[in-house]
Image (cartoon, rainbow, N blue to C red; front, side, top):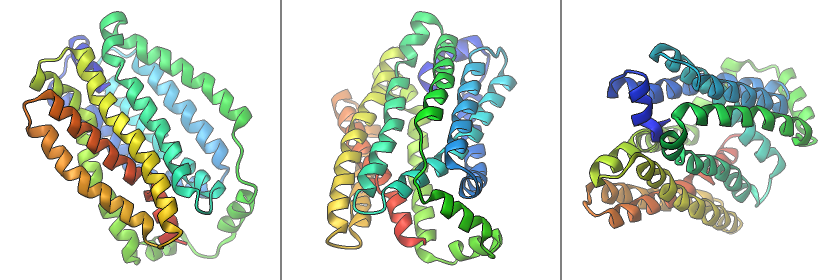
Length: 313
């Protein structure tokens, strides 16, 4: 959506603040519904939660391409937040179930690389909007997602012990309130939540407004700014997620804090890279900043779920 900003605003009247709300409402719903998504994934089949999530996401994507007023577009974005809230907890937990040893970080990283691929392809949105209209992209990808749900239905399997885990979770005497008390009484868990919240402030600001920033700062077309905003960050993220996953899997065999150290290295790279990207007047230096930020984000994304598995039983 953000790579098609000019085309969308030309078709559906809205201010910049209202356009920003399209991203924000997705995040508000996604964040508030994620605990419910995790709760359901712990107690029912993760496979079916994932398939349902993809189906809803794809349907909302398709419908986004056919709405003709701002309130309807805002509603579609909110409902997309519901679908992603149900996918991420189930998907990451399923990866963690299958990979219990020293392959956990690289497996998580490769899974996250799918998100990077989608974001990079999303950068084509500006070109698609210029050539075929912004609605076409949403309809095409919505239909593709519905078809891919059939592939998941046939191919996705749960780890063999998951049925036992689900049964045990259902039969536990402890209530949800007790589980939350145990989690929020643990300092390591709270530190991780705060870290993710701070990282998201930067990540979603970039996701929502980097195409617009590059277009205005360097006088790029809508298509070029969309590709630059997603392409360079995602290329860096690919490198970071593979290098960060392999490095942390190697490091954790030698030091229990190895995965944490990799995230800290990424954090130390990420801050200066954002300063470089936002302050320079030279596009080549902005590219360097985007690549470095992508590496930093990859280091984090490959390791947050494995670290969570280390600090929470």
